[in-house]
Length: 327
View 1 (cartoon, rainbow, N blue to C red):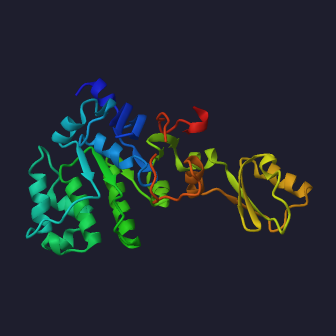
View 2 (view 1 turned 120 degrees about the horizontal axis):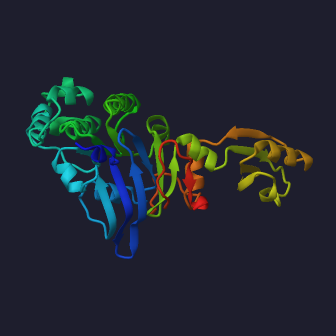
View 3 (view 1 turned 30 degrees about the horizontal axis):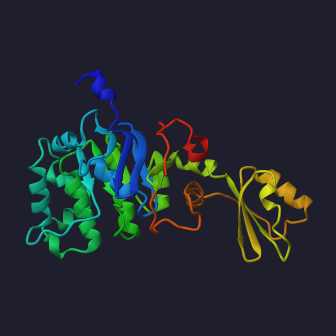
């Protein structure tokens, strides 16, 4: 393999567009994922995440732009066994055991992972002889993980991988994923569990209305969204002028309480004190969920609600975050 080929990123989207009727599910996306990175894809349902994953896996073709995996086409990388995918859809195969299914899939690849290793990584060693159509939903999710690992891929794509798992099973899954990633492999996963993205990803890519709204680490996202939240009791006082206070980027009123998102909490609190408006004062750091809501349009929505998606250009692991406002 030449140096140029090794230097190619694992994933590259260049001006990718995919429309369904009048809706652009993916709208001019530029994205680059380096080899060895773990990247989380966040966005509401309908944001374009699943469409982007379908394009990445060669299950669909873009209307414009280009998708490349390891410098070549997505379909070629999949045929070569360089890509493994764990998708949400899939029905249990009747009358075959877990081991038989993983063995069958492994044999379709040129250099598969040993079956016992795939079963162990997926936490299925004790269920190897169980029929696939007679296991729980959480166990079926682990089978999908083992199938995704069967080809010993360099890139693993996970679409909502822990959706059916309880807390303990989710923890075990991410432990296994980190073992896989630490071998130098690349991981791209979508999730609605924001803490999973923060804990397990080198980068978080936020998608909104078919475009990339932000791209950076969890800390960078929180900082870009406004680093702190200042809460005060209005106690019948007017909320007029709160948006004009130093550092304030947004104001949310709930009953007699106001919550101010601010990039400079010290300046905001001093200004509130000068107005005599520090009743019930509370200052907290913005969490990833607050950042997510701030970086996507329609802050009244929450992850998991039906929306379409947002855009930006990719950045590397060390690069500062870019958001819609900085373009």
